[in-house]
Image 1 (tube, one colour):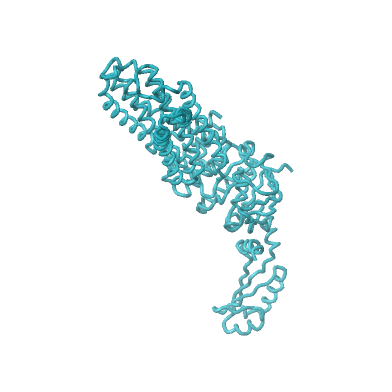
Image 2 (tube, chains in turn red, yellow):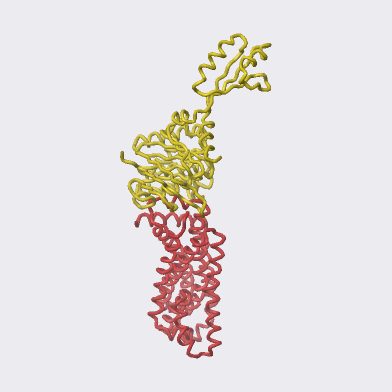
Length: 274
Length: 299
């Protein structure tokens, strides 16, 4: 089983390399991270935290938007593309389980995301440490951001595979992926904001908001990183909501979502008839 | 006999329209069977059911002693799709190495396999640059992986030139000699000719004929055509002597007769002596036999 997964992963990685996806993902992350590192330099003196910890907080906001987008862009074609090219029927006659096919693709795409995230955050960290040697204190927060970003990516990869199975056609899958990104990453938070405003900080907000934040993988990711940063006293006042939700709950959401998304993808793939 | 593929009373409907009805067949080791039929006759549907790619509505299918599509069946079945497609960014060798890994074979055998189908020199090039015939060979190479008990080949010779086609059948003969059962489809009888042990003809989802080529020829009992060219000035006399003949525009006389009456008719024409300049006997062609069976049900 491991061998079939690894062979699939190696093949997918090679395809992504040839399609320039690896270069695009790394390039995007490095550019955005460096821009943020430069822009995030200003408030350092006011907060009294080290420069890297401040950069990590800005990188968290970047990752919430960019990592799901990259993950969806890489995954929407995974099954729909095979259907369109006509490569799926032959693949499915091989003694390889559908779950193994998806696992192989996930390993390859996660590796690319990890590379991109590592390169982007690494560049930002180097810039921070170069300017402010005391920044090494922020390295644990950076490490936490790296692995949680990769898990966030895994969640959206899994959901992207599921959409790819449902849409059957790459164009349809692309549309669904963009819609999902807008919904979960942008509109969801606006909706919550509207709810808070309408409720005026009443009892509804106290009960519904934490659950709503934990249920969205992107919000859980943001909460987790901000709460952890707050615990380290690096970003005081950054996340009002983060303070009310225990760290273990957001951590659990960050870890469980990728598994749930993979399960969803496998269930959707099983329904595909080539 | 230990059968590799057994299908009994297989029925498949697509949204109420019958695609296959009550089809039964069985294939033993080493048997080469051709499945013939028009487009839409149900050939590909039947193959996809055997491969476990689509479900079926009635009947039983057993592939190498297991259910179609089960892990045990897939481990022993090789498939060549009608239009073999692969990711264009990969080289032929990378693609075959992957397929070898999926079947638990050593990826190092890839170049040997590609050599066997005549792609040795193109192995390092991307599949996107291959011609249709070359892609078909990559498909053939992957079907040779391992020692498949059953090969399912969907119009395997459609993109191949006559020489490649001969090489292809030579490969199949080798596989059949090693004990593989082979089921291949085609829409022309001329393509499969004598290279298969048995011929099945599907028409509108029904099995309308089954047997060896000579079986089919005998059962079809198609008439033999004769073309008689009269000697100069003897046209009218000859036409009178052969009243059942139809005169063509070029002056030749066209006759048809059943196989059993052929010799008597030839003897009669021979008695006409100098009135006959030439005589041509045309047995029913493979195409005639095929259309005889595949049309019968449609009318």
